Length: 135
Figure 1 (cartoon, rainbow, N blue to C red):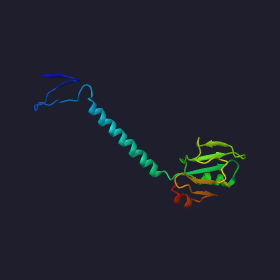
Figure 2: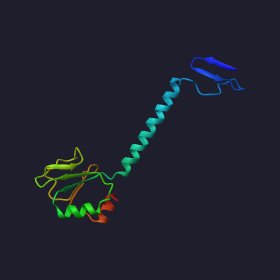
Figure 3: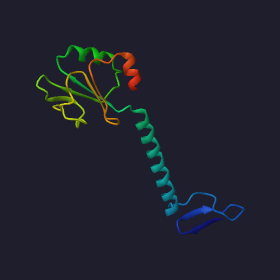
Figure 4: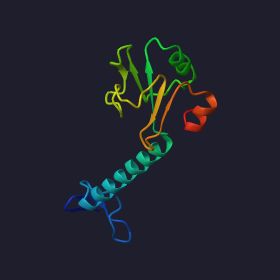
């Protein structure tokens, strides 16, 4: 026999408890769902952050070493800043971690780690990229 109560339209089980889910979720179910979603988002962001090595690659159009560096990078590498011959940004990240006219950038290709603030200039070989965490 159906029992009609605040938010419930379910049959009672033999133990006298509702057998189905409530027609409208009580606040505690919404709170539990919100906590689970937040926990999943936090874990996913920590995992992604751990996987990201933090290196940003700066390259210049018309640079032969930059073309060689581009060939060594994995196709899914997205943390880059491309500049033209005058130093104006023409592609890559919308907000680079350091400006393209920074005195840190003494040559191209240039690498900057946003986590450790380490920087490297020049072509990085496959072994060096692997040590940097870029596969």
